[in-house]
Image (cartoon, rainbow, N blue to C red; front, side, top):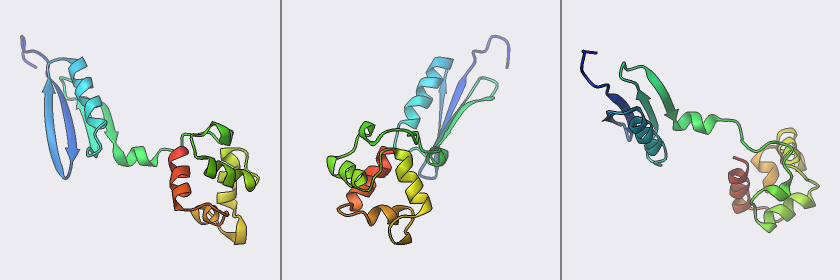
Length: 138
């Protein structure tokens, strides 16, 4: 960096096989651009660098998808934001916590089914309940 030159912070955003490069004269401005970019549904990845082009923070939608599920196993079903129908289906099967459901999905339930297939064997548990379950335990 030359003497007297102001630092320039850089934000790189990739979406739809293209890149957008934005610059900010302040660190706070770069952080704001970065935060705004990762809130967009179309952004696949983003990163921001300091004036020496050293990586400060990065985000990848793929990495965000690979994060472990956020709801702890000991969470009671009552605390989830789910419909009464979904709640009743799970309770009728004897599940009281998120961990109970996950264990049954992993170990196998009705007819030896595992994973999503197990949930779909529960009476009155359909595709909408499955979608709601996945969103609730993300």
